[in-house]
Image 1: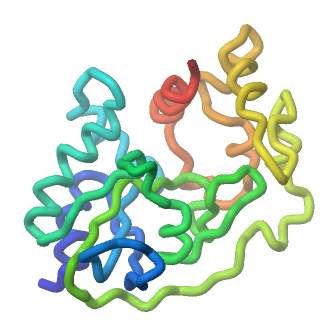
Image 2: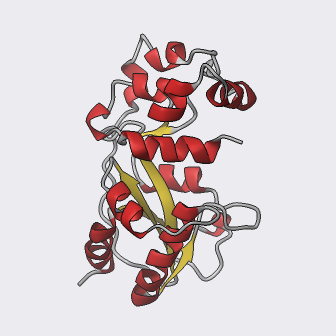
Image 3: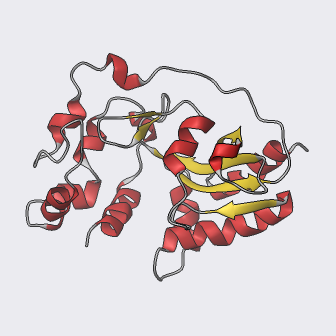
Length: 215
């Protein structure tokens, strides 16, 4: 079975999916690496699997991903890298835009033409030898034709202005007495995006991510 077909079959029971890949060039600075393949989730499929298998402790989702993907990487002869691995951090946003047709959104998150803002990149597999990659499907950014930009007006404290994200203002509001809707249901600006709404995370998943975000 080709490596990516094998990978997809092994990821599916975990609620994870391959997120494309790219051939490494010298400027990437990745020694002994020929191909990078990203792994992530889209929509709510990840949540029930993780919820049933999670362990308490620091960064439970990252710990679960590492625990479940380490044997997958070993089986495929790849090296596992997580977004927070140093030094200082792996450039996952840059890798993602090379791996598949995702684009920066006004919120700073990468938007996918099908999943909208309801997806994430959880890990990368670094292969030392070349492997066959699927053709990349090129699509324009969904934000290019979005004139109303409801994501920028939905935040109750105006944390997004299309050029930056005021993290302290966002955190202070979400953690405060008026931030219950954000804490329990997720970012209102993210919800306002019309792309991929059918793939939105469920309330428990969104509350989990908001709790991890808050101080």
